[in-house]
Length: 147
Image (cartoon, rainbow, N blue to C red; front, side, top):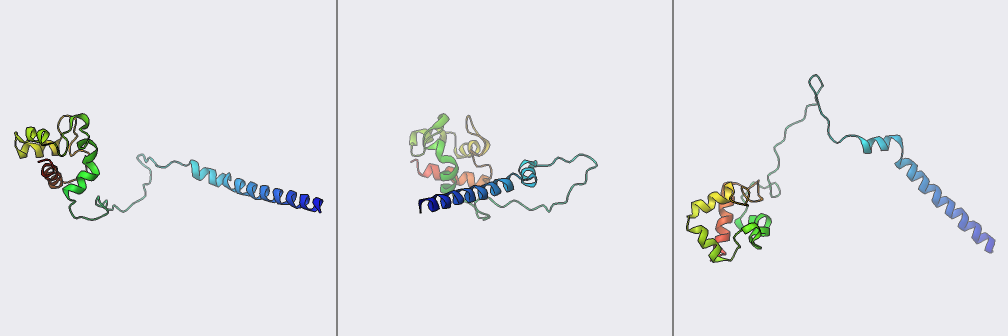
């Protein structure tokens, strides 16, 4: 009986190893290796036939909706990292003194700095897809929560 169990284990082991070898062989086939190694992009030079591709407009940021995002949504997604910690000298939300100093120059200047960039802040912060109106709504949201 013990010999039968040993033979059965031996046969099962070789069967499993054989199936694993088949999977590896398929994975390492010339076709599969070529697929994995082929370039992601192609460069076309003058005279090459370029395939025609339909130009589709990119989906609007925010899940394809064309509706404007709220200042709170934009703040929570794009502005929070710097404006909650004060990173790189960013005025912190909720700190009236930080924002009052900036408001002395007027709301239009604050809007301009947010849209065009100022000091360490890049234009539109980290929201390159935001419209100017969305940036203004975000500034308004921050100011409302900093008084």
